[in-house]
Length: 399
Length: 76
Image (cartoon, rainbow over all chains, first blue to last red; front, side, top):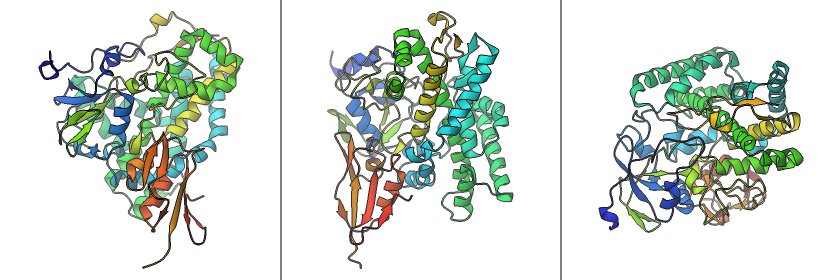
């Protein structure tokens, strides 16, 4: 059969199963881009190889902004409407990113280390005092990044119950819940608008306060952008790290030799965080569409102007052209240029913060609870479903 | 017109190859072997380069006034 006769497969290739990467990707990596039928909006090109994924992510001829407000191929039911930083191209994207980039540089994030360590310790004090078994997701993985991003932005941490529910609803992939998704987004926008209004009465020095000044004094972003930016920072600031913390600890406890390796040599923790970032297919599937703004060839495949391309980061991170024995977790891997935080202008703004939180969470567990183990068989750990990112529903542990 | 020139350097011990710079300003930065490299290191003043330097998550991009050596980006 020739390529043109081959039927276009439905994407994703099956429901996510725990942290397993669908084996179809390994097969597809032998070819350039392939056409897939997305759950909504029709066909897209899917990039699975490391070099192709990086090219699509870094090349300005693939536009995120062109996907806004259109029925483009996608995995989320609603059409992307709001202009958030995630869906902007340079120079608009650069204008917004610059406003907060300084606060998220590795050097500035390093200053949060003592406070973040204190939060980890307080959370673990409480978990240890209550005694085993404990749900590590609720005891540590969720409250840690939630508390840190709240303090950084200036969002009252007491309100976290409210916006966690809205965040959950916004990031749902279930096609029957579009009304609920839109309502949740409206609630979250309204909540941020309230916090912004408070800052106009009583200015604050937190990140949200700085953004309000950038709007009111320098007109560097619109009111709509200000609200959307606050929402994005709050949501992106905790959801991914919370899920990743649970995923990392699950993998380490499921392969006790890895856990023991860290207990024996805690200096490996930063490298372990990089390796697990490479290994975990955090995104349930390829997600955000990019639109080609001109005809171009990528990996030998012609992509026509106007066509959509989606990239599978997790597949790129398993490309054996780059990584030796890519399907194994190797905590002492020497070359690890993974794209777990993305690549190009949308490279995760919060990557230094995520690294700090993950290193302190894993590092403190290894030090304080070296006997940590899963309190249930690994197969009984339940996974969240219909989500953009993978994560445990709960992670029962004992020590 | 001014004769002022700027010099761009990227510290490869610090650069993580995120490509925020090269994605933002492909005319000024490119990624070679997973590290950012200025397309030209000696340039006429260009405020977009300061923006790219300020957006580097690692603050690996240094922009100086070639004549005086004054640091233009990143801000401390």
